[in-house]
Length: 431
Ligand SMILES: N[C@@H](CCC(=O)N[C@@H](CS)C(=O)NCC(=O)O)C(=O)O
Ligand SMILES: [Fe+2]
Image (cartoon, rainbow, N blue to C red; front, top):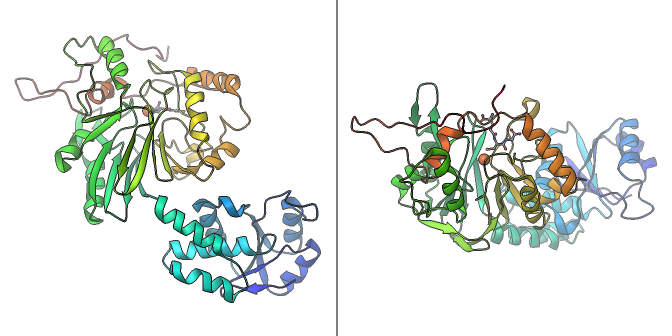
């Protein structure tokens, strides 16, 4: 079995037999990475056998199955992580070894250690056709917006700056205006951190986007508009949400025509962030007005799908609907498997570190509310869980700000602003 050295630490090989594993260990390999999905051909030993044999031979083992046509950045990062954490020499294999080399080379270029133009020559000198890496990188370069997430631990919200490195233009998605319900204080710490990042990177803000009228925090859209003059936007069904909450707040003077935003997006409407194309997908269920922004190869799905170990967003707010949410999720999951999904909240199950990026493929395989479910079983799980959830602590505070595009209530004659809290308006009290 030829073992080909790629770096000081990494070797690759074609599919080995498990009987060779003890010999690999004797040659100093401490870790084996299998990047080959099970079931490609009848002869391959497969994940379970390789794992056993590797452990038996005294090696660590990692399984990062990829098909050459659908490698994701997450695969590349998982490969790098395993390599980085390995103590000694690492042997990676697929069928021929090529996919292992692709994963390595893509990571090297993404991290700036290799130039895209040097990839083909490197592959050739090691005996591999790595045109798959070149194609991946050029697609990635064209499609990819750079995405920076800002996590707000007070509301478990994730805010995004989505930028196009070719033009220096960016969109800000779902920025949070800080509010402390105990003191009534507001602040702009989250929004200023975003604006500092924008300034440090020399970006120009082209859009201030909200995915839906949030029920758990104030939107900082107006504040950011006051600092950047960029247009604010949301989905056009926001007018239905305005109508609904106009009733709940008994707010006669509230205009319910969406005029509080610079732009209302229709389903399927296109827009751009610099040179990158964006498209709006209507995603109701969590709220009547929820939309997904699909920009390049990244979809900002906010409160539809969370991380696979968290499941999905609730559907029991006024105007929410679990079946609609299921349909919206199916539309998102019909995007290509490698589409990067960015969620709007992470409630850190089991106290793990906050995470917000996944892929369509990963969600289809792993999401605890979606994988293996159909519409009926999803609606059942979602509805049962929603019955156990108290209303968000800021729902009544937030909606009156967010249905006006993130404007705080106008000051009264003493210069102070006041929120209006309707009593006995919502279900979900603890008694
Ligand atoms: N404890 C949080 C809950 C916020 C909440 O209900 N979040 C919504 C999204 S706006 C959700 O989908 N939660 C799902 C869940 O908690 O499982 C709060 O009070 O703010
Ligand atoms: Fe939400």
